[in-house]
Image 1: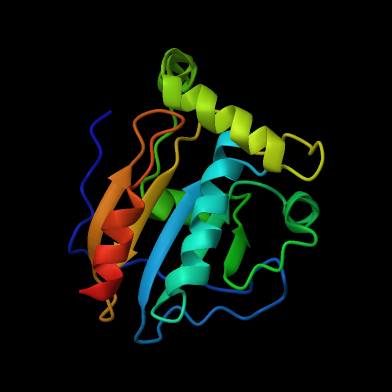
Image 2 (image 1 turned 90 degrees about the vertical axis):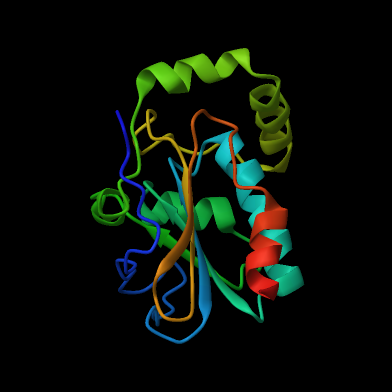
Length: 179
């Protein structure tokens, strides 16, 4: 499936409140990083979430981070318990935001990910970091995607993950923040 590149499109606003009950102000004049993850019990998603958590601690005063999961709020709260997350974690069980950003589903790419070394590294690291076994809710075929949005609400950079374990390079995010 060929994905439409959303670069330069106006970003679809993430609305409502996050799993912590904090109201989301998507229309502020701050840069944003959106990360779409399949489900909370995915060790690879958990590994990548921790990279974003660390990046938020480094540059979070200059950019708003959003982690959007196709998991229930209850499962996400269990996954994030005791982690002191200062950015927005959003439950999107009805796929509203995933569809707006054209996040891909592919069982073939998901299964094919097993052939890549980064898949296994992130899988093992994510399993070590997960606080507990979690219910596997959400669509297992969903590939992650990341977006960088400028202060005017335009998408500047898109990265649709081509396999489980693919990710946006954190140096791209740092460069975007400092630009």
